[in-house]
Length: 111
Image 1 (cartoon, rainbow, N blue to C red):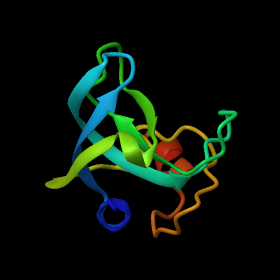
Image 2: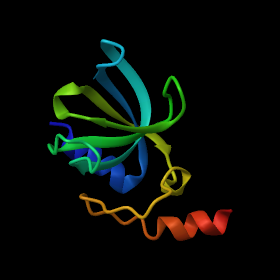
Image 3: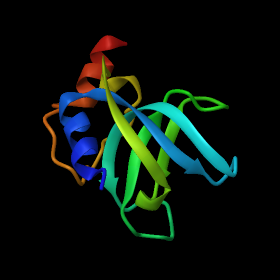
Image 4: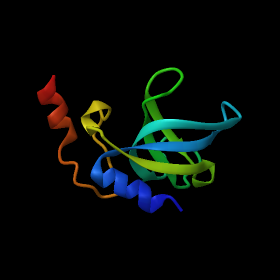
């Protein structure tokens, strides 16, 4: 349902506001995130597709959050852009093709 919006935000490098059911909080929460990918999580036993995003507003510290489609209530695309090298510190193997170029080279040159 939200795949097209999410993929468009990936390609435009736009932050999103996602409203989702947090199993940890037991309620719906709203967070500003950067969309990263849609696909199975490499670390989880459950290999179903999930929406992976960088959560800028986590209660603890910014980190990746992966949500099943049925957890997501709404996604709004904002006008604010993000730079993937802010949080991508590994060599990614994306499921969704995008034109982000070499993230790690931009990160290493910025350091």
